Image (cartoon, rainbow, N blue to C red; front, side, top):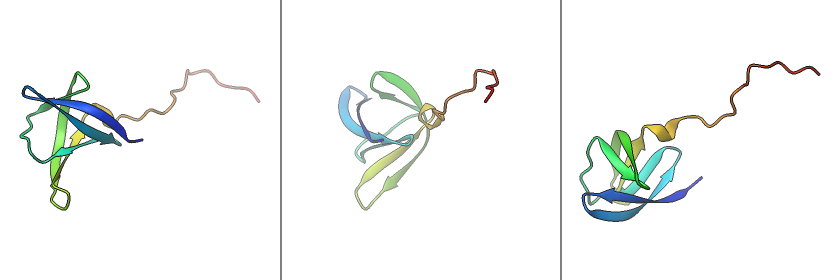
Length: 78
């Protein structure tokens, strides 16, 4: 699901979009090892530039975790 987020780079807040663990922002900024997204510091795994749209695509560490339902360890009888 696409989600619009606020990204803080230096002292500037810009809008970005996240989708499946990838943050997209305009290719106007230098990023470090972490980035502030919606007030949370998130580790940057990798980044690439899409020159067609001049967009920086940033793979975020915690965003790639699966949100599947975890088993409670109890078996069900049917």
